[in-house]
Length: 87
Image (cartoon, rainbow, N blue to C red; front, top):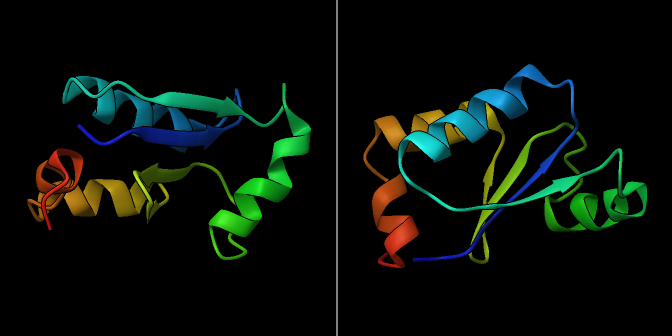
């Protein structure tokens, strides 16, 4: 399974919703809390092509986007193959 990273802040409802979806799918993920690690915001901006809102979600080297993007990918049936590392 591809590594999943999610940049979050503690009081973000979209961050909580994205994490709930990943947990419901049994996906382990690394959470990067930008309040605890503010120096990583520049890293997120670079990886996310300048997108500055949270969450920003990455599956392997693929930038999924935010919460709405994650849910749309899941509804379209694209999340499971991406997690499995298949095109």
